[in-house]
Image (cartoon, rainbow, N blue to C red; front, side, top):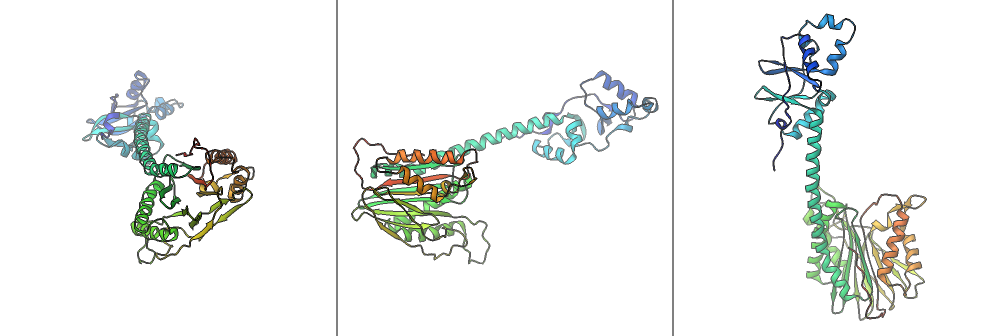
Length: 412
């Protein structure tokens, strides 16, 4: 890509020879009202710069014109202006201008070609060029991030499609705080049931999105090797895989360059027994009873997957619940729970989420509608506060019967 240089900013201006007097300087400034600074040269090589503002201020003082008019022009010359070669990159020039102080932005700088004066550069023109370059860089970065978002959404699309085919009444919301995010989900259907995962990787934006690719790949490999029926075993495998890929073995004797991982909930639903088996790494699962009168919370170990301090042989536990037809399961990342808002500026919290599910999660309301209600309540609670994190949640009503023309809910 073309890199602009200082030469593009060089403007031809009048000059004054070092052995001329201040009367000549006055004459030049008088003839060129637009001239901010006047280069002083010796045999076409610049030796200094006279600022109009400083020069005219000095010459307007009482008796200064009479005293200095016939004296050498170097009397009011800046003997140490910024001088750069014409092939100096604009970004380098910007750094030099900042280092040289305010005078460079106000009075300009001298541009030379092999030591000979090529022209005068203006601080304002330099700032405009830097802004233009930054805007172009930002545009290229945003194009890359936008395309990364396409890739991330494509990665998740198979799970959305599988959920829509397998479940009569479910919702799936994925809203990154930025264009891409660190939350992800996975869903796959089998003859005897279905497996789902909701995960929250370290960070958000581009770093979080990179980590979701690693984590999602590790989960898919574990499912291919061990099947979906033992979520706790899958967590062990994903933990080891992420630590290996990221080089985060805390007992290796070598300091890791990163300490990243994820919180997650993996769960398997067996259709025949109507049993939900879940494993938890710092992420809870909420179960609304079929009659809508109680919300049970299933939580596991407060240990994340993949982190340096998480042992390679860390063991997570399976939790099994036999659910009545019409019961609802709901899992969310901490972007929902940790969001600050409300009159007291505190976190949304698990208790508020439970109350929301109790008040609005009755069997007569389908899951896509519930998802919209949860997001509306959450947005109202957030108010003018900044969104803290990505949001992802999955909900499904199990074994309830609905009409064939019902709509499935996805939001991504």
